[in-house]
Length: 383
Image (tube, rainbow, N blue to C red; front, side, top):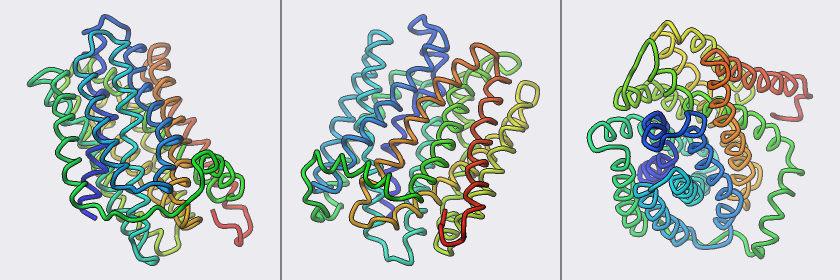
């Protein structure tokens, strides 16, 4: 379980190395902040494509082989990113990394499958806490490394980590048989069938999408806020702000226990109120550094808590199709994450930090409206 947690954190971290470096990358290639922000969008679109076309293979092929081959391709993508001579090549490199870093979403359903029925929430929470810590520490490590060896060195280091992880997982992962014998085309079609059939999955997809959009809008634009007046922070200092989100990662185990105890719906509403409060504090961020830190803590706590509840709930729906459930849920999430990154960068360019916070509030309100609608459903229709 610990190895799966580390593996999930290390692979998903590849998607977030660029976020504290966006201002530096924009200057290096002579492009606008909005264009640099699209680098994050490219990685998230690649990740969404991997979720749709690669993750379902976890129900069809031996997962140990799938995981290790994907990690080798991730290594190549990271090296291409490190050597990129132009912003276009950089976008291609991070896109390849995005597609292949879906390893994390192959491993999380595997952890759920290996767990006992009454312990699934806790196990998913532990593995996901590793994933979430990886997301947040990635920004800190990226900023500090960039201050020492430049932004390209960050991606070289990431490639080295992927090679070590490939060897470790090849030795340690069980070579379990795939749970499905469906042809690949029918396997993809069945994802849509699951979405149409499972109302709980659709509702949890809505929460997850709004959470990912909020999360991406914040972390894509926070670099722009902190690198300008009144802060003027460099890459290393900006990267340290990722540590503020570790409180949110710590909510993963707690949320998993709430799921095991059957309190998913009430807890979801509380987590979303925390996200809304987080955006309220962040709106004061142009004049108060403390407000920025408090806002990050509250927003990450809420987003990650509701995400764990979502995953614990949906993995109980179709045990034979957990990889495809992951595709539906996470693919939808990352499409909205890409939209949140692009919208956040455009909002900052058009209206500054206030426009970004207004966008985040809108995402939070949409989630709470959905939660209230679910709250009014009959008790027999769980949400």
